[in-house]
Image 1 (cartoon, rainbow, N blue to C red):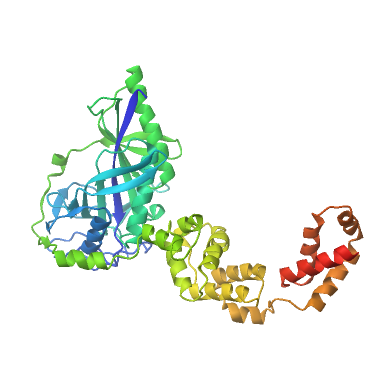
Image 2: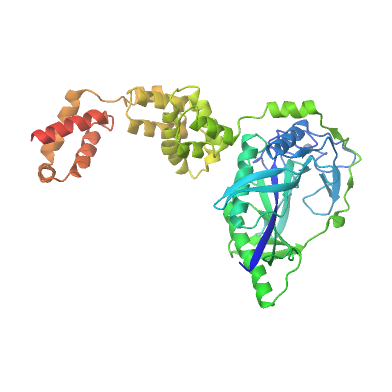
Length: 478
Ligand SMILES: [Zn+2]
């Protein structure tokens, strides 16, 4: 342990508002290029800016879930720089009076619990997006994202390992997504992370030269970039070859290395000054309490309710309360079907795997919960067997079919008629004399083979409990 890695994080999280921060353009992701632009967010001179109240409320919510001290009179400032995706030539952000300061987030790693302290959280507007067309050698600009509201969460340099960084990002994702602050989808860019990293000799108080790795958008990339960059620092310190400079670097996913992007700017380079066009926002006790009282159940509270009141296993509860989307599906389905243990089973075993085939993340799974509940109800009540239920789930996911009508139309109701099942058993036994002999010689494995064949004969619709019971009776009587 000769060296110590010291890291601080700047995490940008897009706020879940309908409109942009200072105009009424839609803030939704996925529109056609330049569909959501007006003179105000395109930076036309003389356009008035009006602060989005919802964005401030989500900022207050972010402050509350990170145990931060809320600034009572917050203001906006201009951060000046030139870049083609920034039509005004400045970004509206908070420099002098950010929405909150001095919060903390508790994380859990293999070393135990640790408090990560936060310097501040500020609200700011996003920039647009440049699209480089390598085919024609041109660059196009899309202003849809321009002025979409963000919070930037700035931590103190409290991180020592990549594991702590990942645990913190996971925790932030849970805190903010359950509070409705953001959907925190890294793959869509609604959660992005910059890591400030330096390396010093263990025991030293003085920080080493700091580099910043910018704009990584997956946990895997972040972990790999931290490992690469800290090894690079240590090598320069050990060998004395090469030089560390304060700079901004990017992560090259394909090569698995960081590369220099530009020398790091200092705050003075941006000539911050108060934005005279926006009035200060006063945040009263009453407003804070209103936001606090409207906060939905947190991930931790959900976990406690699932393991406590609902008596579900810790393992299952962890999965469901680890995704805002799954937790919403669980709650919504519970309104229609009263067996939580069954719902959790169906979500974890069937729904996730059915949707994963579609290459979807847990947060992208969408299901009509009333129909989902109907499937469980039909399986539970013996109208269809579980296998048919699984196939039905796929049809609901893919084509949105109505479960009851679909079962009727396709004649998928469960076969429980013992006469019909016995017929099928007799046929399969008479067709497979060799396997019968194997069974007589003590090979239990052929039972599965028989069950499979009988189920196939009955179109997969038979009651598996009756099939098993009758089959064993026949086999043992032979
Ligand atoms: Zn606009």
